[in-house]
Image (cartoon, rainbow, N blue to C red; front, side, top):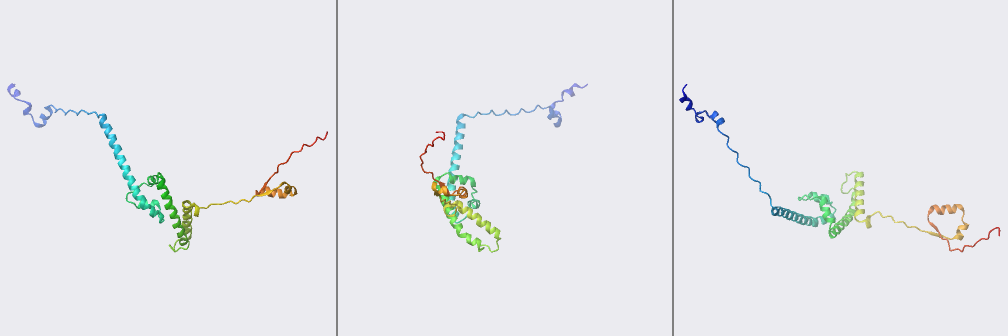
Length: 214
């Protein structure tokens, strides 16, 4: 056997597909060491978040103020707040905007004043709705619903003028003891059921009656 021929065989002379299996794998790069975050970085991050939040609230407050000034006039003209918010490109949250209004006494009173003016505007529209001058083809039930809804809104916004306040006037007649003695049983029953009378008992001195055996 020719040992020279065997000794000349080396991995470099092997085919490429076989040399790939015989070469050792390349070592993978070491993983980077995690750098622990310091307390200074965490505090700075919280401070930045608080600053961003404060700036966002300030910007929202300015946007609410700008929208509020225009909305007051539109509300007084009879437009609804949800419709105004829907038409605005800033897409405000209605509940968040309402909380902003009610959170300040001055803004809340200005909002109520605008609704009070709105009730007066609605009052002038009722006759036109009833006469169908704004929409002659409208169904009568639909017109009645529109009138009823506006009347309810008017009563809430301006209760002194349009609220359904019921006043009860009670006239009480005083009946003395002498008059009671002359009344019949039917008169007394009628008085008790009507609730329009009150019985005044004058101060009386109790007289001790003697015993029958004495």
